[in-house]
Length: 215
Ligand SMILES: [Cu+2]
Image 1: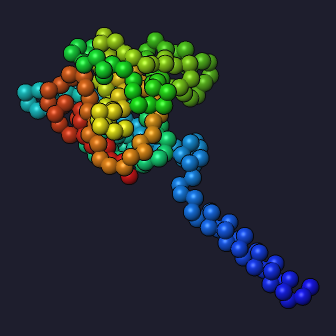
Image 2: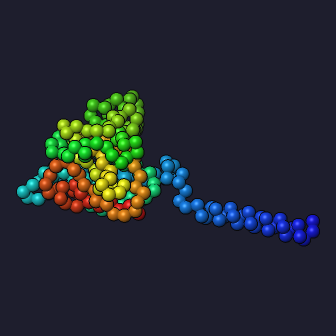
Image 3: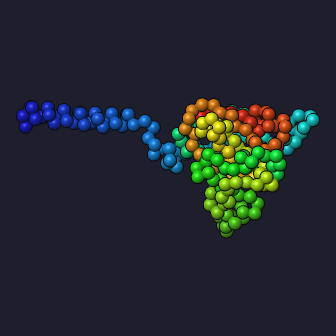
């Protein structure tokens, strides 16, 4: 092999290799990692009723974030952008949700606009016999809309998908729920429960309202 041919081969290797590396480096946040199960981010919320808000109102509910084995305040929730969010909400509170505006009875903004739920009458069916784990999205209620009689709270992230376009998850009485969503626009949003569940709680960060920072 003469030198010219050798240089041509080396040049080809460098160019092709370089293009390959360039493509690999250029490829921004591969889209398929957002949908891979390993790439999902788990956000777990717990609603606890009957908390001592103040001396005159000792029975108000609050959301908490369950993370790394501890309960944390829900005042400032953080989630990653462009990743599938697995949202699990464990609600130990009951309704009904008299006075809830009609639009907040509907599931909006989650994958498939659906929420999967377990309540006292459906949880036994999913346990089976000898089962160890309960998967909320199997054999669970598929919820698109919730009646005033059943709703206890909502997890509503205002303008998450643009002005006037909210993510709204109605939460049933004593119900465990699972749903999935994406938050693809970074920024800080307000979350709010839209069920009139407690005048103090609804106006207090870390009780029935707070922020969701998407980064
Ligand atoms: Cu509420």
